[in-house]
Image 1 (cartoon, rainbow, N blue to C red):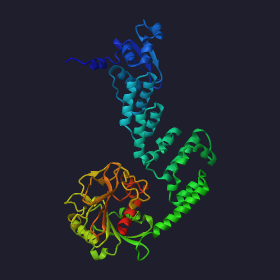
Image 2 (cartoon, one colour):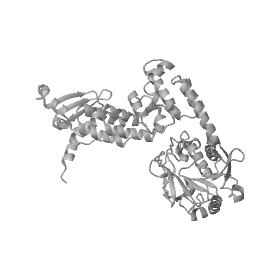
Image 3 (tube, rainbow, N blue to C red):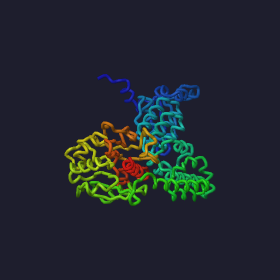
Image 4 (spheres, rainbow, N blue to C red):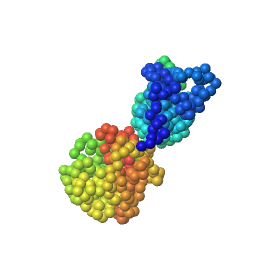
Length: 493
């Protein structure tokens, strides 16, 4: 078979016996490479002037040209050489990619620059996204910058808590990062990480991080913290004690928040005993997980929550009719999925509101974890059961109606590494209240005939990563409020 030009050129890379140039490369590790001036000159204007310009006349007649390259290590120069011969590179690490960008700039090789940028854009990780943001700024590459910012925005919690990549940021990059409008990180956590960044800057300058110097150091970044979005008094007091903010301003926010909580606890609730009674009706044999969901329901302080484990028993309608709403999810099998569906349907027909969290709505008739019976056959569900589990990181996406009461106060929802949800299709007369960032419905409601209750589906597994570590939704985001708001909505509507 006749060899291609590329194959021929690849075959003469670093062949000492036919080379006319000798490159002494590296300082930490040193290695000699053998090459051809013509091919290097065709790849780079800098090499062309070096090998064939007037400055090279004194060595032009030598059998071998001797070139020292101390500022690149052998594994990097090997790829520079591969590019000169084949216009291809095999990048194996972030370090090599970073140095290839430096080489592309030094030797004026735009195609090498582009190949390296493409590699960086395709290989963004939690560990390198911040470094690549800084590379995009250094080499003024808009596309890498946007790709890095999008990645950071979609993985903000992990990036912020990765000390290795967050602490050590240049101020310019930190400002760029904090300027993102949809940075999915609670403000208090962002504040704490900014403080750590400021302490690092102090250490770099051999200065004790006292409040005054820290305030000076953080002057350009601290105002990105949206203090008014913080609700917890202890968190606001933590910020107040830092000495970085106006104390009177924070006191006013605490006062306003206190008033909001009072109003929230007294708003349109038909209560007999001062609290709504909610039934957590689940099939879950893990007591810790059940309690995690219960605590989410209790988040706003306006509910009393009882738990019935439907793995062990399916209650009667007489047992559940006293509750103002039912929250249903499964991890284990319902004792009888048809009886469970019939029970919920009867509850809805008598005006009760039901919130169902994803898994019971899976389309699998043989699986006792899912709901069956009249709730499904009578089309009470707002969705057509999903077939596919989606296990990939997602966040809160589009909210069609920003004034909907379920999304009130919700700023951030981080689904975690799995973001466990399904590819639901909408049922007739259903309405999507919010979407995941992948476009899948996140919250869906269906209003049934007059005097019937509302059936609401929240398309995520309700146990947080506080109980199940990194795999489920981030307990620092607004999942608790989403669950609590959903229950209040089906009660009051």
